[in-house]
Amino acid sequence: MKFFVDTAEVDDIRELSDLGMVDGVTTNPSLIAKSGRDFKEVVAEIAGFVEGPVSAETVAPDFDGMMAEGKELAKIGSNIAIKVPLTWDGLKACNHLTNDGHMVNVTLCFSAGQALLAAKAGATFISPFIGRLDDIDLDGMDLIADIRQIYDNYGFETQILAASIRTGAHVREAAKIGADVMTAPPKVIRQMASHPLTDKGLEAFLKDWEGTGQSIL
Image (cartoon, rainbow, N blue to C red; front, side, top):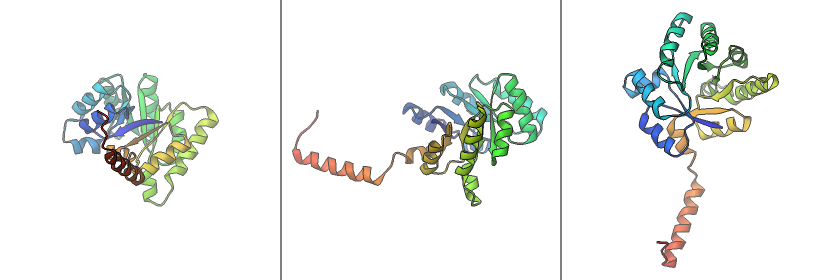
């Protein structure tokens, strides 16, 4: 499974990248707003040191606007994935941008039917939102499983990018189902390394080692 980091905080991305935990980055207008920086400046900085896809989202609601913004974002770098919403205009823009040779991430997917349309439109990535489905008492993992089955049935190359990840359990279940990619905030990725039994075991090992009076160095 590829790990994308869902943030616009450059320092967090660099730290995780140094650990080999960054295969790409996803951003959106809300994340950029939290950073307090210029949109294109942030995206350009991230795309400059992250080798994998960096998703940059259009904000226009119509096809012409998405196309104009998408082409402008694509100028930032060859690793830019243009992010468009799963609307009819968004699907139309996806098809045109894909045909022009750009990576496209179709976002805000909440049904398998939507995911099928995105694949037909040529999306590079489809972003089903797990957490937001869980918020309304639906199982986001059911959606991941449905998309995986449909894409495998017909050999679609669109990659399933599990989004709206809230917990390490979301990552684990999405990986078990076979999502190609997951995107999560840095906090969630860090929390995946934590386990109380690891802490307890380490504490015991160190205590026993101190009792030997030895030193490795």
